[in-house]
Length: 298
Image (tube, rainbow, N blue to C red; front, top):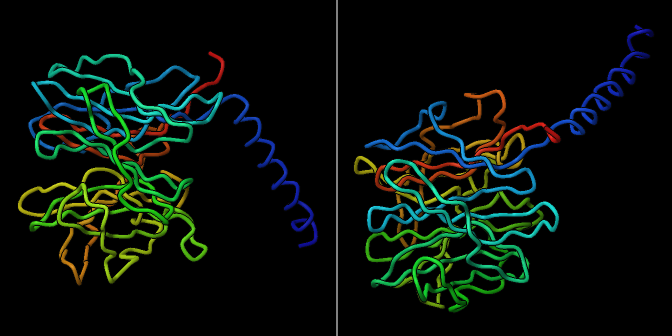
């Protein structure tokens, strides 16, 4: 027993050294993956990879389908400055796509560009935990020209703001960092208003409506399928951006919110993929981001 006790620190040290050596050779990079089918695709092993240069990441894809083209809005971040901005890719029905081009940058980090159409105009919302706001941008010239429009909510550290229209109300789902000492993916808050341009959003009486690291933080557009409403959520139980859960919204009104987890997706289809944290499906395009293990210098 004494010999075993003496070996434990050595095993821990070897594991630490192995991990450090591995990180010198490899790094994790967020990439995009897609599939074009007539229905929602979840056969991720069939998805095609869109891999960025090694100096940056591409993540948080959200899509607008217009004029037979897919306008893919993403976060692009250069590792050299660690500050994200919003970029645009355009894909056709055959899966051919353009290189990302920067369309919106602020003095602070931008990510998760939730773009939607309202009364023939396009808007983008962004939860900014640094300035404690949920911001809205209006598209002046689709799809490249955007300008600041207004603040929807102030005084909360919101991330991954996601809108959904249901029963004549607009519902705003946001992750709230550090709520009562929690991490930013532990708590989900819900607000509602009569129109998405309102600056008078009401807090849902059940807030936080979800308190679970496995399914709280938003992970993409809420969608309807087979007469049910599904909310994609991040699973951060093992690490940030580890997996996804799909949750069926059972009750959504001004007094009550209920959802039920239907499926949990983990990155097990490819040994080089160790994370997935955004999902979107529009028309024939199913799009995710994924964390890819890559060699640093080859």
